[in-house]
Image: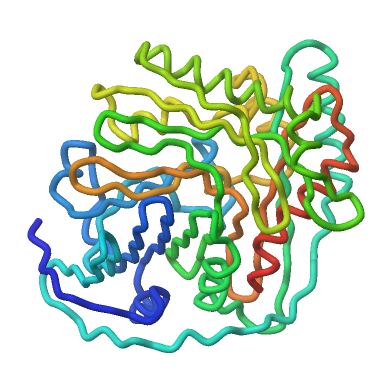
Length: 380
């Protein structure tokens, strides 16, 4: 597919999003590669990795579980998509790509809206039931870790302003990947700190990101406390070891970095960067191999996933699923879509999760998920 390239400089990438109010569209800010991709109007559903070469940029979005019965997630995920119109910022360039006829792009002002909202769900009983089931599974020796999650509904007096939320997510989260995907008047947004897989030539990179502490408030930790905490290190090492072992099934050339701290607006995370050399598998193939890591599902994977499907009261949809972009040659990044929310008019469903091991306390983990939801709530 031949795309036409026209220089275009916008004050805010969200302005490009605003030019296509009635189209399927996607938003992506990748600070690691200094790349912004905003796409609008589906051009093609990309069939496979061979077909991918026909398009300049391809979006890949999946769902956490194979099947979803919740209608609010219907038709979202499980595909690669090429768009008709793109706004791209990369390598010091800023330009508009279009397949076929161009449209006039307005540099709209992105107005910031302060939403008046309230929590309109109560999931504590569901949470306690889930945590009891996880504790029973761990104490019975069936698993060492399970990642529980919450879906919390927030209702606004007026429809949520997605453009404002996206712009705030970009401003508030300099160490994260900012994403948005809109289809059929439903928009999934978030700010993820976690790379599932990055593909650059023959280099494959993944994050082990597990182990969390609050950096502010009455229960604030220091970096040094988190780096030496046995419970968090145990949880982290389960994730690190699974990623390393998965990579070693494909290639012997695997390098494990030192465990350090990733600092976000309200939280510290333990992070280990793991790299490998491989030229046999594509970005999407690597994403499917690695997902879900024990940072998202649990260990062992199959038993943890079965427990979550049975006891988690909501459906995850695209939450914690692979989400990212690749260029025509296959290089790109896929993150896991955490610190995220699904927006439908004046209803917003915020999602957050936490890793549960033998030493976990249900109430403390509930507080941790509240802290993680601040990523979304701060953007409102």
